[in-house]
Length: 262
Image 1 (cartoon, one colour):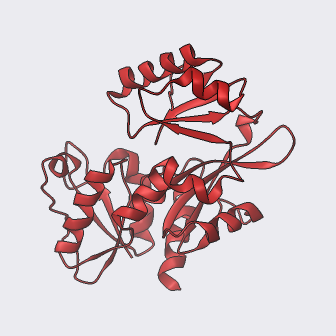
Image 2 (cartoon, rainbow, N blue to C red):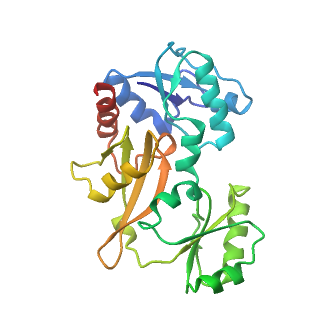
């Protein structure tokens, strides 16, 4: 496995500081690593340093990309004779909630997928929910306002704030039924080549179940406990653009090395 990281905007020879610890841990473990400029990628130029070796299996670890931008990165890696581990379709599958939701809907809050100009009042009335969580296909509102709405006016308010702070919506709107969850219990797991991993040796059975449902090579799984005590799936994400959360860099790299050795 060869890892691909964003370089620092100020120095193309060192990793972006956000990924520096993981980059150093990967190098120390003997994994091949290359750097590339995200700024140049936006201009559709891709010049990794060192160059990718022909036949190398390449895993991107960096900033979130739109499906279109990831498609260009994938094609650029392949054009150099290397093999991207995750296809554009697989990236989109875990990156966009409506793609993975049908496979996991019994494990996660009920979700309505709607266009930006939908009649939210009618949708909420038909669903019969007292409250919902509002997001686009990828992200929710991260300001102090939060993302919980109790009526259509609040849904519109939250959407406007997402557009204001992020510039645009990705995809459409997802309204997720509010459930009494315990936020401080949220934990991130990863699935790599069909195997579930945690930052400790204890991985809930639910993660192993999800690993068998989602046909993608590398993705993150976020679980949280409900007030009833049951574990609930709150999010999937493509593992290439999912941060480690509480995972130590060394533990994360051990997971990557396990895929190399199998």
